[in-house]
Image (cartoon, rainbow, N blue to C red; front, side, top):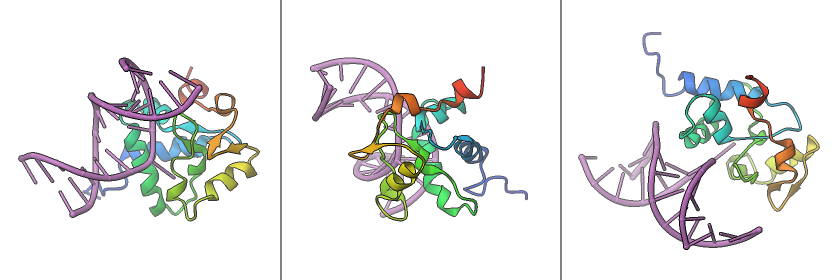
Length: 117
DNA sequence: CACATGACTGACT
DNA sequence: AAGTCAGCCATGT
């Protein structure tokens, strides 16, 4: 593979996927938290981009556990069907109200805080 | 090359 | 507390 960069396959994307897969069930995190953990605190949008590209992944990605810093399901529109994100979260015991995660501060899972010390 | 868009965030009002 | 504005970075037109 001479072409290390195939659009998808960048280390950044892979690292994002790795962190997302590490999110325990019943927990949620934010794009900024992942970006900051990867050393790209100002590239939170790039994390969202990685999620958008996750559709090409063969392995399932718990993207429903990734929300914005306000705990709002900003990415629900990008799922197979609007509302799927909410259902998936509720299946894990997360309470959703008005497309927003309840007890977000409690359910928040920060990789920088949970993984690295 | 310039402008607009987007699964974001922080600061300001 | 809720709404608005600006900064950031990659992609699309």
